[in-house]
Amino acid sequence: DAMVIQNPRYQVTQFGKPVTLSCSQTLNHNVMYWYQQKSSQAPKLLFHYYDKDFNNEADTPDNFQSRRPNTSFCFLDIRSPGLGDAAMYLCATSRVDRGDGYTFGSGTRLTVV
Amino acid sequence: QKEVEQDPGPLSVPEGAIVSLNCTYSNSAFQYFMWYRQYSRKGPELLMYTYSSGNKEDGRFTAQVDKSSKYISLFIRDSQPSDSATYLCAMSGSGGYQKVTFGTGTKLQVIP
Image (cartoon, rainbow over all chains, first blue to last red; front, side, top):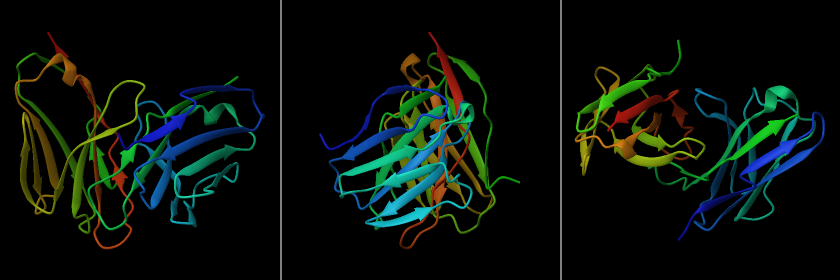
């Protein structure tokens, strides 16, 4: 089945230690997104790739970076995680020519200790 | 004022009840309206989407959009315990890439 896969499902990292989350898709969608979701809050868009073009949200901290080496893969790098970065990180994909929403991965729950 | 407002609940109903979930919004440019279901510790899954105003039905689920009132609803008939989840409304404009704006989600519990 075509899908969006996130690894790992759970990640524990130390305060200040760089961490990378990964996302892959078999849908061949041209847009990939990274969202941060904290408990009882709406998903917050961090950035997205429209093909190879990177688009950062204005309020995304510099601590968060992303890479998209090819259509199928996208990575979220947190350079120096703080306690406030503990959250669920969601990867999503979409086709830009369709308004029928996103396909989400199952998420990576990040714990910072 | 947030662009999308959604009552966080929690909402508890007995099995078999009709559930009504609602969102209001302020951006008149929104044209696509979506409902996502999110189980605990999982990513959201698209439940239904509607373009512009009107109703859409899929099994036990009905989505309604009233653009004149900037109000959207999701109805669940014959609710089941497996419907217990958080329901997120989401919406976007049309034409090329459009950012999707999410509500905060309503937590629903269906009690057997």
